[in-house]
Length: 243
Image (cartoon, rainbow, N blue to C red; front, side, top):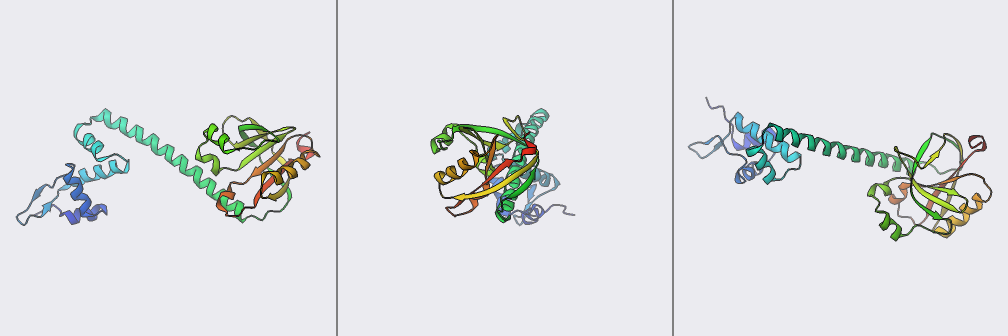
């Protein structure tokens, strides 16, 4: 009784094309168990396991040359090192994707929420300082280049911490904080404008009337709109929360 499968049956097992199997054969990674009198390639359980290994290694982003090296020369310790390395890479990628998903969810909420000035209760936020500027200075493209910021910077809400004649551009962090927005009630004021001068005038008029830090949030959802009108949310700690 013939217990082998054809190339098409083998392809169906793994939901791939028979061309892909032929490609692996051309590269010397896989060979049929035998070819019958009708010149049909036949594959046994051994080749099924070999193909499963090849596809797993491809899923780990190994090149054909690397896979050939693995299947022909690797010992147990080599496999363990490879698996450990790839496990870390996958963990890093999962962490990156989780951050992107969190940013997308945040964008959706920011875009759909109605912007109404109000009082809101905020939990403690830890802020990482990116750069400090004078109130008469603005962040430039050159600054962005010099800071060598990752793409993740643009996916986050940017928080400006205003103190007297300077302000600090920050993002939320789970690590060591340069500033802490304490838990409590905040007056939330939304302002709109087309350029920095318009925002500066509105923000400075508020700062002049308040003591203590003023927080201004630039919502990251702005990168998903085509409007020239920008929105900022000013957050002012209510008196009972800064005494």
